[in-house]
Image (cartoon, rainbow over the protein chains, first blue to last red):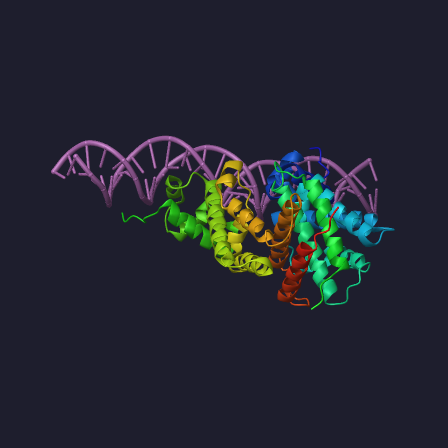
Length: 189
Length: 189
DNA sequence: TGCAGCTTCCTAAAGCTATTAGGCAAATGA
DNA sequence: TCATTTGCCTAATAGCTTTAGGAAGCTGCA
């Protein structure tokens, strides 16, 4: 019997690819086994269960996203940083829809704390340092940015903006302009 | 044999309640059958399949949400309308998380066209008439509002803002202030 | 080299969900 | 009252998940 050479890492990676191809919700232990031409039960030596697989894909995606964001932020500040960061987020979602969906997968508190989600929100704060916001306004702004990015990408991916003018890219650009302007003129009490 | 009195409408309603209790993704034909103390196959006289059930719950939720939004908008304009509309959205999501999740369920084009989703976006446009935006800026603004509402509520529901100061309600209020200000001072080209 | 022990993958089995086909009994209405 | 329609049932197939236990491959050490 030739062994397939399964490892947790290979499985999670293949799971992420599978997610991008068929959707994160459709990622299943069975489908993954088929992809490796192996019996389903065999995966249970490498994965605790189906939930474990999804959690690991989510953590992988969060790392990838944070890595790309960190690259994009290097050497940038102000609006330049804002748009670079936002574009990374949107591009990642469009090129890796399954992985992006994975980043929205609910994590239990320990997993969440150990994830790159924190890194991502630290980067958001770093961008805001280019604007002049004191707490608690900075936190409000972090939440606003998170909401807009997550919300826009979610609607775009769901097809909300296709088949209707203007182009989604144009709205995205104008929304980032508006956000920049909002951050520069954050309303006081 | 006493009949259970199933109808498509009762099933969809119970499905919506089930969604609020256990989550939209966990709504299953089997669970619904258990709730009516009836065999699973019996539901297939009233529902085409599992997908059909979910679509119907989504349509129900979209109607409910649009009805509430319409009520809230009556007699309001400007920022007053904006916050009332936004609050309805957020409150609906918090009091009916399963139904809210259902509104995010992808619909095939025909179902989407027949849904109350259109009504909802018409209302967003009505609110924007209180601000001074010409096309295509109005559309950009519609998309911005949709993104912020959907994004904020999604993050809040996922627990993103709990266990951390400031209070989510405070951020929400300040974000609506910021949106109002953005709409009043929409940046030109 | 040979073999002990660990690891990998397998077979088998049970339980849950989805869906279809076909049947009997209850409700409807002529 | 009887025929027809309708509602719910049994039975069966098929897919996914998970656990238990077994056999073959690999590793390290004598």
